[in-house]
Image (cartoon, rainbow, N blue to C red; front, side):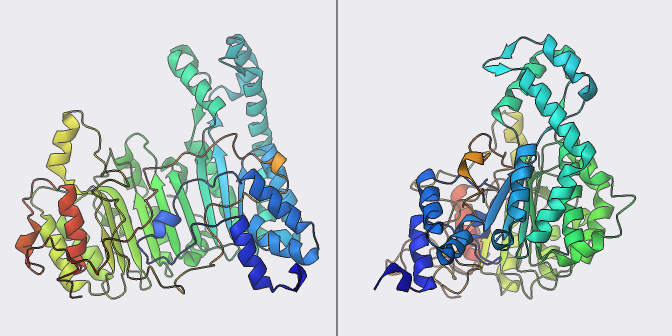
Length: 514
């Protein structure tokens, strides 16, 4: 039997080994979901693997079509003339564009202050900033201005998203390349320049969000998932008093929303200003299955939970997560109670309880009333007073022990669906593959890297001690609230790990009785 006689299924298995896919998209209700669908940027394709796939596609039309599934399921493009040209090239070839399921848009800081004077200003700086020629920055500023003024990005994005007929997920990533970083550092060291040339994220975020939204609407795209690790609150303020009539249309399509807001100034007030907009979006998003809203770990939000979520009940919600929030116990209990009939996963990362609230009250409710709950993640939860005391002392936000330590990693709890082969979405599509470049030599990959927001990347699952090995750390008190040892002052790592298991009645292999 020759290779041409092999079935397409077997050939796809061979391609999986050539270009390995270690992380596959998994269902939204799984604890490992945000481990896979994290904000970690797609890495550049391995040169040897990319060449092997390219050579495979040159063999014949059948092999070309099969290889395209691997090369173009995920496309990553930078906001630049070169990146947009490459994106349009992919979109112009229907046999490639139809395979795109995830589109990542890498957006750099915008040069704003003094943009019109940059020709005069930058040449007055030293001839180089380290190894960099300042004339390069002049070119970048001009390129940004031309793209925005000519609406070249709007045209290409509409064409691309319209051509991506299988698109499921759009992601906006903040980008700061090494050159921009060096210029920012130089400007900060020379105060006289900060009022003349400045790189800002808010206008870049606002522009990219609007152009992506317009493209999704114009194309009637099937895309239902949106994520951004460093979303600027300022970028959405323009829609607060005058929300576009099409906003409801986009919100109705959403099944998954993952946002982490950047560490801007006066975050509480800016998020409060967005309250009316969040009400419009969340009330319209009737099909929501997974929601994650996060803030910087070192600057937790102080707003009440319902100032953002407005007592909305999502009938299809399977997983809910928040990060870095100061809350009362009743706020958490109230939101969980509304979704008790379907919610299977709850992530409360960096959540701090205010004075008068106790974690044991939250945990007791989750254990006794949330009978569909498969997992709960309590990474770095604490009490507000203890957190503030640590902050005054100058301590950094403490992280859990590193992966591979004796304490094991944060997401190591047993997942009841880990061996369910049918619980994946698009089995051969992961989050970490080729950027879809038609020519590897033309790729932006490796020249710059998107920033990650708020430590959203959660480590992958690994099984706990096998159930065949008896172990017990609950002293037989699996159902007793006293076993939690909650003193209302602080939460230790070992406590949190025990609490996560206690809530879902999996405290130990000997006494598990869910």
